[in-house]
Length: 481
Image (cartoon, rainbow, N blue to C red):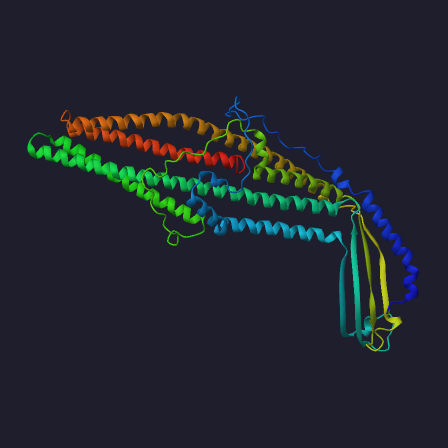
């Protein structure tokens, strides 16, 4: 056992070292922070407005919603989004990276508290007699030992706490990067889904166009048989029918590829993915999400990628202070104690006890510029993080302005397309009325119907672009208006 008297004699020394440790920890805790770049240094400033925002409109209240896709009021899209979050492999990998960062933070927090270990040994040993300075009675003997040791680095310069702060920021960045990846995948799924719906409508229009081309070919062939037609008109009708059938097949192929893309996003192979029912012509004609005017640039603060860049920049700043603190001495409190004996019979006697308590100071003297290079490396990493942050902000502003520009321009184009469709429908109705009254032949009806279908195809494609632009704006603003 430990000698009680010896322990009492050393208590003042142990108590004094504990008081010294507490003083050092409270008095010099900010050294790493003082040697790091100031908070906010290297951070870019967001612009006051977007170039394509409506300055005349009043700002609208911000709508925070994790389920932003519900703005489109589409139950199928809602179901796909749920499947995405449950089974997408990229999201699973992102969660694993978050867990890794949290585990690394736990490892870094370890030195904040003393490290305590216990050990024991038992064995038989024989010393070489010719290697001893003094002769011993028995060169072969047994040895038993039970002990415990503790070690604690005094965080004099805030190095350990700085490392915890750094890894905590990195863990936050990993979580925000996961959220950014989730939003990116959600946006991609929404775009693919709306493209699929648009292509479904296009396929219906193309099939109608192919049917019209078949009627035209039959009519031209009938005229040729009756002697009132010419061969070139029949040939042209066949060309139009072949082109219509080719366009229909291309739409079927594109529709299948979009379905495959959606299956991959929800974590399934195309063969496992339940085939979505084809959407009837015109079912996707609901209006795109309305864009609120006067979107403030402060919404960029909610973008997950920008918040992750902010955490990474702060972590890089702390790392500089940690590297500078490596130039300073490390002070560690070490202690060990236990019992040791050559016999098990007296292992726990008073004379078998031992202990060793005292501080240890490690002072860096010469390391061939290694620490100086490590500081230079940390500073370069901080500059890289600052440049990455600025680049991410510029990209974010461009994405918002692009989406605002697209939505405004597409809205004006949609009005023109809508007018063209109305005019084409009116022309087709007029041609049918003239044909029924005997004032025009059926070729005039076919030409009018061809124009009507072409304008419908253009309008349908434009509607798909509007849906994609709406998704792009929501994603660019961090997942909500």
